[in-house]
Length: 89
Image (cartoon, rainbow, N blue to C red; front, side, top):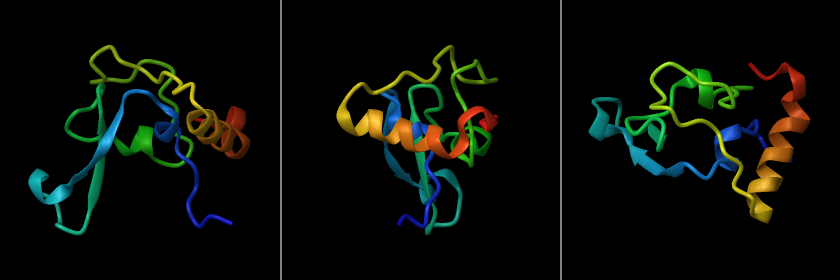
């Protein structure tokens, strides 16, 4: 059993690897993910519990969630949807 709630970002083709937050004037122990929509870090409204980036979001540069149609991408999306379903924000 995972201690972490699934996030939609892990199923998106636009996701990049983690950035070390020390480069973003944040505490050095924090790691921030970024993507094509949010190159400086994904907002917590999107990356947090139930965040849904299928609709447009302010500052997303016209890029929204697009399923990574690989087995791991579909699994990540199914995990997210099974937890949040229609409750996703």
